[in-house]
Length: 366
Image (tube, rainbow, N blue to C red; front, side, top):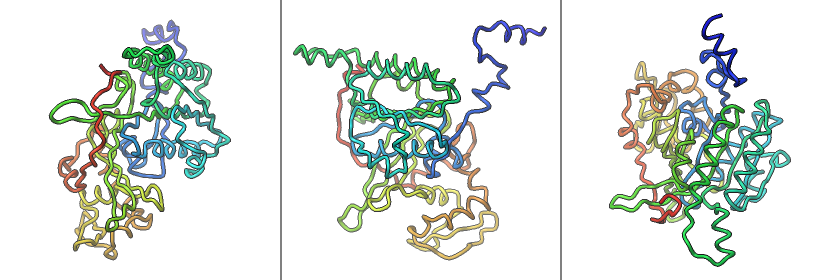
């Protein structure tokens, strides 16, 4: 018997396997969303998407965090007809219409109200312990940022005004415990969170809740936004996904997603800027766009306004007849060299987030 077979036979862990044959590395399931650049933000690939593990969506209030979470959960539910969304709710700001607007079957959503971190921890770990790897479940927590600790509630009831130093520790323990379950049982979890501004001359956004979230997360987005206006009327927003941490995407990548009041999330938003950076689309004149063959330099098709490029008819030839998908993977994927510098892309995107309301204290992270 070889040493490898001896070690494998003697292991007390049932899922012990040779690395090249391990299901945790070779069979990681990917669920694609209907928005290509969301797939890029999640995996670095236009054909990628959500996988098992923790994804944190952080940002100030009214930055579309819950809607992004529901859109991803809806894609999971659609891909798996028997799947269930386990929805932990501490904010109660998502009426049933939010779910139905994203095409979610609410008969396959288990809504669990939570009042404190400990309540979430006990219920979540119990649920994860009793799930099998064959159970199709996606977990959404809305939100971590607004969740008190049990001690904080008890102090309020006892009229104590002492600072609560237990919340960050409780959150760190929660994510430390659930991380192995998410990987071994193939469960994606999306946690909505808040940000605050650190104190300093050049304050940056910090994800609330302590370091435990950073250690455990596969993806952390910090979401910014800028207004779209028609004259003085606000018609929607460009939300900017800042990839603060990822196991799949180059950190500090910036990915814009357009949302309008009338149409919701624009599925093809963000692609035009990347295609311009790669030379797959050019601007033959101001305000006009045209598909170009990068090999021959030949302009193909008619000149179009930006709104007319947001269609499958415009993008399908670029996806199917060029190496654009590989270009995007090279640009955003970890460990893949890119011919385009991220600084150049940011100049093309002209990304500058709206200033958020500043909160310079976060007791839990002290």
